[in-house]
Length: 278
Image (cartoon, rainbow, N blue to C red; front, side, top):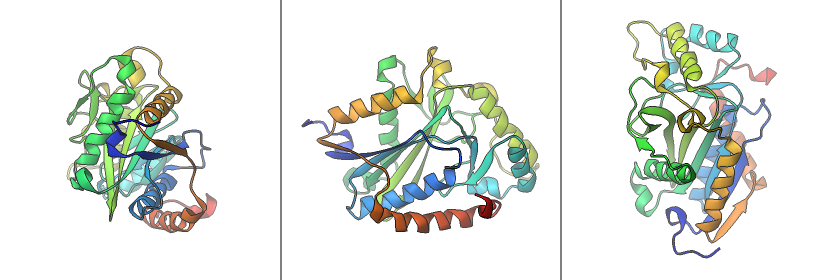
């Protein structure tokens, strides 16, 4: 559909929906996927892309988490509670990904406004606000003290965090990633992260001090049940109105070699995983 107000100035958008995946598709593959899409977007082989993804019982750690004094104990704690720990290649600290958490990635060329390192963050915040417009709620940004993975672009309602942002910049493109707690208990997820740090850190380590009550899901904050499926429907409606052309694909054949290379890079970041059994 022709429009004079293209989303983030992009006339054409590619959408990759990976919200209905098998539990074996864990977060390691998602970070390799976003690196692959950065290469495609920077090389003009793909238009700007939005990827939606859901994982089952993963805890994604930052590099700082992986250097905690008792990381072996922390990893064992997560595994004992049924969560796969994955070390990501973008910034931030530990976050919980499960079937009630919708993840969104925006992959944009680093041209014009997006040469600014914070422009991608601002774009993701705007996208979240647009997706939540039907619920007539005010979305705030800024670090939420006591939340897990705290940062300047925490997303909150009424002082309680429901989402956070990270980004991965590669030459010519940027992938901005958001986790959005859509369903379930935010406090229970925060308790898991708090207890991970209790097992993995000692007094000399630097890590977030998590207060479970400061984290909530959108369903809890808005007071009505919301599903990631409803969020996806809103996303597609938005893109149909604010783009000239919308393409829905999975990974293209010509992207598979790059994807395999990026998986190998992610495996190197995760030596604690036994890939022979995956």
